[in-house]
Structure formats: structure tokens, C-alpha cells
Length: 354
Image 1 (cartoon, rainbow, N blue to C red):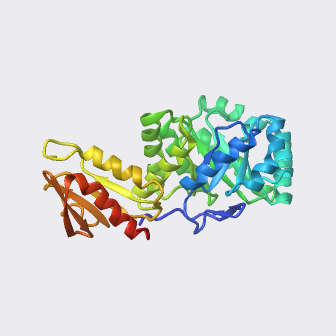
Image 2 (cartoon, rainbow, N blue to C red):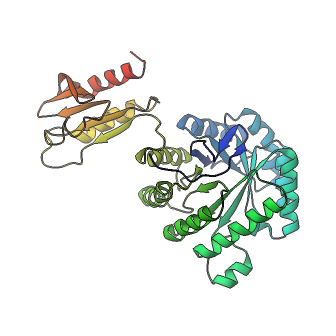
């Protein structure tokens, strides 16, 4: 079990962050917020995938006006994303959001940031301080020349200390950049300096495999070091994929598990069955299973029950047949054409479905 950094605990709506709370998975809607039904449909999809906090963009007044309906009908706490228009921060809090995200570097005037903080304190609204490579203060860019880890760290410390000076503690910090190594260094520096909860991620990670790999490396290293109280995988994709990827990262480190984990062999010349087909069939059928089972689908006698004895259930495939096994012990032999269905039936039994 990895040892997590000790942070103070805050609360966004009914979700606790930091302290002894689990790492929280969040995402952001890609809909236009003022399109209420489309936004709520996406939030429900995110919730079903395991999302625990959701952020919505508020770039226009019509988005602000949509917030009460969204907050009322969302199954998870709603965070308003505010940039450049501080008036929308005040209006969003009036509309009942559970949290706001601001990048102080985009707001500019310290007294306006202070007023937002004081209003959040009165309203019981949490704040996420965003420190991004694209929103650093001018003096820090002039000092360091570019958004390096030291500049990101200094900005995060600056605003955290101001919030605390103003008597506000229900906040977390996110330090994000698209450079994985600078991102890791900045978060490490901040984590050593304070007990403020950290939201982690790699911003602008990209699309498809590139974005998933880049996010997994950056987020995974920080989590391995015990850093991170909430996480978002930022992808150019359906936000549901962000949530699924986040859980894969957390599961691979033994931090949180949600739904079945499928362990399967790499393809090689020893395999006697269409292993990708079998794995795909099983994976597709398990979308609605939430029990954290470990499922092994092994393609040959080399990678068989011996290597997968820790799995809850699995298949050890041979030419035209497979052994169905449980916790390293064979249950029965099944024909190749029946192996996927036989495994699924056992999984459903474990999950309480016949």
C-alpha cells in the first residue's frame, strides 16, 4: 500500500477531499453549459462511470443562468469554471454551485480575488486555485523567463498563503502544465511545503494514446510518491474516457479499484486461440459490473494458471479448449467457442447476478 501525503481535509458539497478521504476522480463537461439537458445527460454518464466531482464551463452569462437547474439535478457536486470574468464567480456562487475554480493569474487584481474568497467563505463554497503554465503572473514570467517548475511553485505558494491570510481554508490547489517533468517537480515542491490538498493532472495532454500515456506517466508518478487528493485525466476525447482512464491509473497502483480488472497475455506465437477476440467479448459484457474483480485471460500453457493464481477468476487457454479457474484452482474445462460465456457466467455469479 502506498503511503499518501498527509493533507488537511476540505469539502466540496458532500465530497471530502484530503485527509483520510480516498483520491477523488473528477472530470469536466464538454457541452455548452447553457444547454441544460445535454449537460445533465453528460454529467449522468460521468457519474455512472465513477466521476465524483464535475466542473462546468461558465464563459457566458447564459451559462450562469443555467447553473441552478444543473446543480439541482446533478448527482455529484458541481464546480463552476471561471476565467477572466470575476463577476461570474460571484454570480455562480449565488446560483448555488458547490465549488468554483479560478486562476488568480487570469483575474489580475488581488483585491478582486480577495472579494471572491470572502464571498466563498460566507456562502460555504470551496475554491480550487488553478496555477497553469498559461496563466502565470507577469512578474513570475519575467523573473524565470518561462513557466518552469519554480515559477509554478512560487505562484501556488503565493496564492495559498494569501487565502490563508484572508482566513479561508476550504481550498485546494492544482499546478498543471503540459510538460510532464516540470509538472511533477512543481507538485513535489508544493507537496513538501504545505499540507494544502492537491488536484493533479497533465493539462493539454492530447488525444488518444498520446494523451492517455502522457497523463498516466505524470499522474502515476505523483500518485506513487503519495501526492494527489483529486485527479483529472485531461484528454481531447469524451470526458467519460477521462474517468475510465483515471480509474485504470488508480487501480494499477492499488489505490482504488472500480469494476473488473482484466489481466491478459501479450500476443505471441505460442497462443492457440483468438485471444484479442475473447478479451474484447468479456470486456464489452462487463461494462455494468462494478465489483472490483481481477479477471485473467491467459493465452497459453506458459502464461497459465501459475502466473494468474491471484486472479479471482480466469481462463487458461489451450488449442480448442480452456481451463476455467478460480483463485488458482481449476473449476472445469470448456470448449473454445464457449470459453467467454463460461467465464462471464462465473463473473455474474460473483457479482450477485445469475
